[in-house]
Image (cartoon, rainbow, N blue to C red; front, side, top):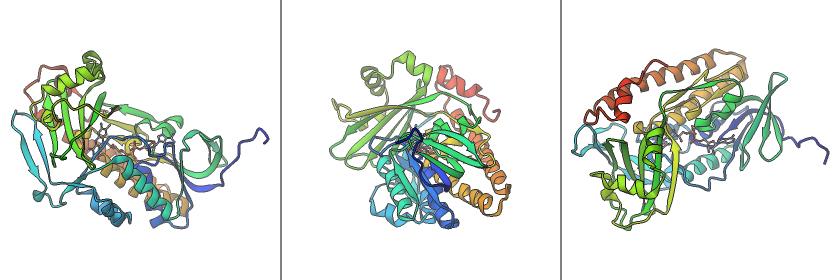
Length: 372
Ligand SMILES: Cc1cc2nc3c(=O)[nH]c(=O)nc-3n(C[C@H](O)[C@H](O)[C@H](O)COP(=O)(O)OP(=O)(O)OC[C@H]3O[C@@H](n4cnc5c(N)ncnc54)[C@H](O)[C@@H]3O)c2cc1C
């Protein structure tokens, strides 16, 4: 072979990232603009654990719109009928989904869920390349030449950054992530023989907050959320420290059987951030690449699906009619949604006053929500 990298064929839209946002964009493009060719590149093989287990009932309409509701239902994910929250007081209050017009939510196996969306995109005519990460991007004849981790390259008229919080494509194009905080989650996964707790449990603590979500196959995810520097100071990455902190919770600790050892663990950035700008003439960012929310919101997946749908309308308008208006509207949608989120979360964090002098809570009082 000569020194030249082998090229995939040219496509109209190349999507980097096969999480919920990338897959939703691909599915929505097939639905709204079937004449456009779409390729999706996912760096993983969906083989490892992913955080983000709680899917609110609101997702049903979006999955339906994307044409994947029946396939989702067939997976028989565990329904969640309530969220139990200890926040602002030691008591555990329950919000039951019978009070929600959207109905119950689900606890997901995220790798399986993301892989399901990618498989559905493939069935609908999207070229899906798993195990192929996008590494480089350069402008070429009004479009893009993309370099892939398997050594191949691809030309595309439009590119979508769906790479999650790293926003690695948009950042190569000069966009910046405006970061509000350095929240990080330390998750450990346990086997629970009778899969006992059917609710999501959230509990505020002096160092931050904890949550628990029971997954299918009798597993429970227990996650400690705090700021990066506090975690470092506490040495929260150490199992012994993490277990010690867990033992001080009132409610979350009850979900782990005494003496149980975690069978898996991970640490993930989880802070709030927004990309500026969220799109250019021939690219845009979706999902966490465009704006990342605190997991407290349980809005990350829904936001990812929704942004993929809106993005598809904007891309179709750009490529089929040459108009920029859809992209402007999309950019405004990302900014306004983020502003609404900031206000809601400023208010929610302010409800917890018991540890107002502790760094985690003190910071959130003085965070300049709305001043990015
Ligand atoms: C600890 C924690 C708990 C959370 N809990 C919840 C929850 O309960 N409910 C909820 O709704 N949300 C939750 N979230 C948020 C939720 O996980 C995200 O908002 C959601 O996954 C965003 O989807 P996405 O597709 O934008 O990004 P991601 O899910 O991050 O997907 C990005 C994809 O891009 C791939 N990728 C990355 N770089 C490249 C590249 N260069 N080339 C090709 N592929 C690439 C990745 O492998 C991945 O598949 C949580 C987040 C954290 C950190």
